Amino acid sequence: MFTLNMYNTAIFSKKESFTTMSTEEKINDETLPQEEETTQKEEVVADEAEAEAEAVENEFDLLQAELAELKDKYARVHADFDNIKKRLEREKYTAVEYANEKFAKDMIPVLDALDGAMKSANADADKTELFDKLKEGIELTHKQFLTQLDKHGVTMVAHDEPFDPNIHNAVQAVDSEEVESGQIVQTFQTGYKYKNRPLREAMVIVAN
Image 1 (cartoon, helix red, strand yellow):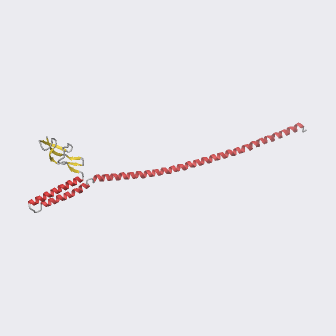
Image 2: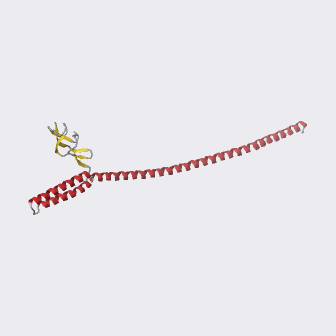
Image 3: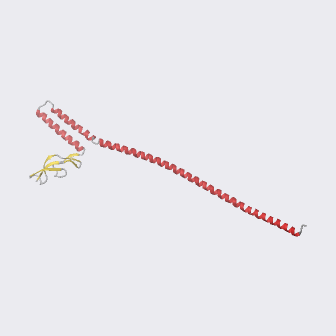
């Protein structure tokens, strides 16, 4: 027989079951938005990470391109430097090899003058006249030769210069009333200078 106690128990069980279901539904309703929010955050983080990775990759590509450009510039500069170095070496060799070219050209007219003097010596003429012509030719040639030497920085040590041990070599000392002691009485052999450097000392006689 269905009693009052049994009815109360059934009602309580049904109520408890309904309460349990409501609690579970409430928990599920609260959990779902949290999961969706978490998923959205994960997607945002993933998108940001992907964007950052793409930016890093783009920057890397840019740096690679700049590095390649710098390497190309370095190769070009290095090649230009080598070419300039080789050209300077060739110019230096040429300058040394042909350093005396202009001097040699300037000596040719002097040789021409000497050739003319030698031809005059073979001409049929009076001995006195021939001697005068030869003397004049030799003097002109000597003057021309000295002019060309001076043009290239070679000069004679003047005979009236004060005695200088750097350019004079005293080979003899004599008594003299005309010059002071230690000064030049006579030049025995002419000296020459190249600019300020002696090429050959002048051999001189000095006064006691």
